[in-house]
Image (tube, rainbow, N blue to C red):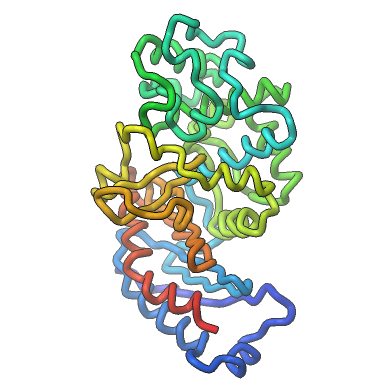
Length: 353
């Protein structure tokens, strides 16, 4: 385990806050002491690759930890952490009147191949965002840099046609849903590509200034797992989301709702990798450390990536954080394991007054 180059710092984002003031007000704990304990726990955390960790409390105080060659300015491949970003971008277009959650692919995509004799004909944008649309097959074009984005969306429809699934009945975690939803957004917004959609989002919000949807290519990005971002950028995204700066109350409630409570969980990496029954909102997980979902939806949400990056928002304790790292494909549980190994210390720091 590498410890060289470990760096820890805290940033105070509220002008009326300082370490001295908080320590003088505190009667039960020292924030500085809790940060020292968290630093020690993170330095001992097991990881096969260097990683960074950052968290922000309700008062705006940030804690940062960086190991080895990893920093919060390192650009990492997003894998599935981009799912939450994509869902928020599309929900903003719904707010702006360009789309409706009851819209169907054929309402916007004139090449959509699924006909009214197919059970999939009724799938809606809401079901695409919650991965209950009935799409289960993922054609190779999703991962081919030279493929045409629009043509690939048509191929998604063709490859899933006739599968017999009723939209809303099954949750199937995969990349096809958001690719179709993104094509609907492109057509509804009347722009040339997803890059136009993302550029508009960046201009409107100031978020992800160096971030990009560029995997497998800029012309054929995977909306469910094709970004580059830095840890600082994703943390700022979570901050804006938590502050209500990205979505109105109605949209936020929809984002955070459990959209799989009545669906059969057909495929879930949380079940296969952790033996835990997590549920799903719009582009985010409702975590539950149980073999059967017995948790309150919206309490703890996250969007882990296949390389072990792990952004999450603990709404019950009013803080958010990100583990920024890039291991090999399929090491998503390693990032979760890092967080769980220090959760006690993070929660103590977040609740210390």
